[in-house]
Image (cartoon, rainbow, N blue to C red; front, top):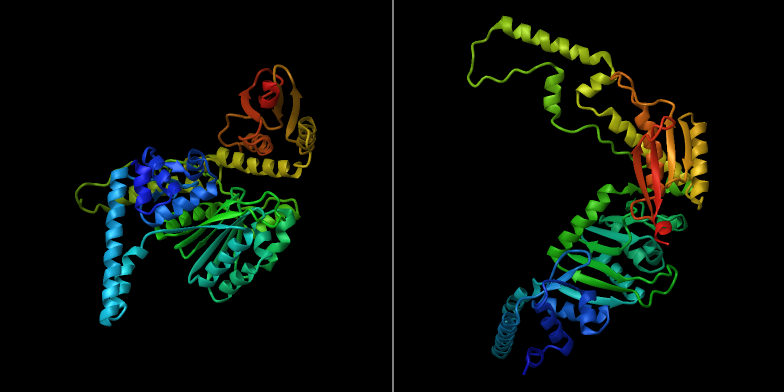
Length: 460
């Protein structure tokens, strides 16, 4: 008799037994990886893992996607035998209690220890998933967070669960919606209760629900057709405070970087990016830089010293003079305080460039896009741009305000170059087939250049 047969004798199914054997020989496995090894689909693998986790034989991480692991086979089998003996003992006590006319309180106490473990369930079909969302909203006491991806708002509004979510908001439950807004779905958000806070994030692709940091719905599969019936949609329901707490931290990390609904809405209705711009103003110890700006290098004494009015007034006068010198309002004064004007202006330029690329996003061709960018650049009086194709496609940059060494001059060249850098990085993000490389000047007719390497062209 092998391990699979032994676990089957103990009450597990063939797939559950083989899952344990495979997991025991691996450090961690995703459900999809286990499904391949079992020769089945991911949904069946999740069903087996759900039960094995519920009875305490398999552990699950809070990663995305989740990963599963287990102990050695002898340890698992001993645990299974111990659990079965405990279940038999509880059943025997329950039987004896009933026969003796005792109350059921003792039985409930015995069963409580088994309810603390995580519980899993797999739902298939959009109607069943939305029904579960409605149930969680109806049960919520404090907070419910909905990850709606790009089209999840459609599914929500086309099901009765929208009423349950709004009802939860009306009775005081904090409801948050994190979605990836789309021009075609904006109107559907108007069906949500006014108290529901909505934010937009380009990072939100998945769908899920979190209730009271105790229950989680994590979608496993969603039909590509957003207006389809979703018969093949599948989701994992997890009842676990540990998993829910980890899931909440993940959600809040994205939530804190997301944009409020009204600001994001302007992007799709008014073609403007009005998200709050977060700037980096400097680095290092600002206290130390402030001390240096005040020309104060003295150290605090180790022991108390007698008060000397003359020395006190003299040192105060020196600091006051240095403090007054900072009030001249020059660029150099800001730099003394650790405020990096160059970085700030470049970041502002990035934002302008991002908006410019956004306004030109419907232009498909590379050359057509760059031609429009050059026209805008010259019209704004920022300098001259021209492109060449030897040895690679590159853009030559010459600015109206080139860099100078004067510390009192506002470094507008950082702003101007930040615009083109922001426009190109927005048009061609890191995961695109175009690589951008910024290089120093190659000749007298340019300050620097941006080389664009088209990966799909180089691989042909």
